Length: 232
Image (tube, rainbow, N blue to C red; front, top):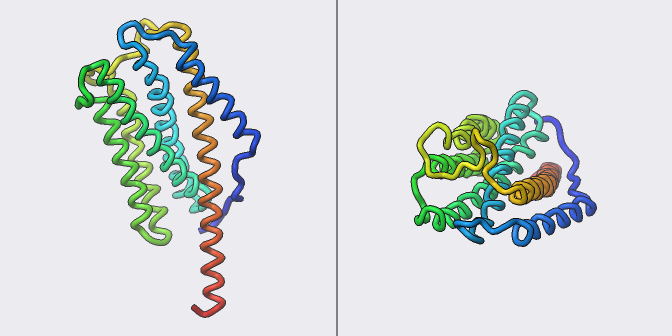
């Protein structure tokens, strides 16, 4: 393996930026945005649900790109970013799978239905949990290589999830269709701010996780080097 990255965590400045944007998003979600006429306040989960879904897709796209770069260069730089992004993507997908049924209970009257969007999202969650399992079970350079291949193949499910409400009959609400965005202007603004807040959170967590993973690998290399010198 070649290549390395410096274990630099996010600056305090970006931490404060994230805090301010998150507070603004929460204010808009619970106070600024109007209450939906049919579902009431439970609809406010929508802003968390969509923000998490967008960043889950984006996180797995990063895994896809970083995996391609790793297979081409064998640089640990890309492997570290892919691993970190996959872990965050699983977290965001879990948020989607939790908020979706809560919202669906009020909208459909059931906690879970085997709707195409829900089903393909659950499959996506299993794919990237399997990705993390592969990383923990394989050894040496094979671990990163197998994970990279799996991460590339697994990304195929992302466009399937996104397009599922157009390909199959579904009860999942369509916020955007041929007529435009089916929301009040205040709701659209709130959605954009919440997506921006989740995106900033993604990058903040990614920089944190990359720094931790890089430091851990450096510590492991130093430990192995000391053991070799000590003849252990």
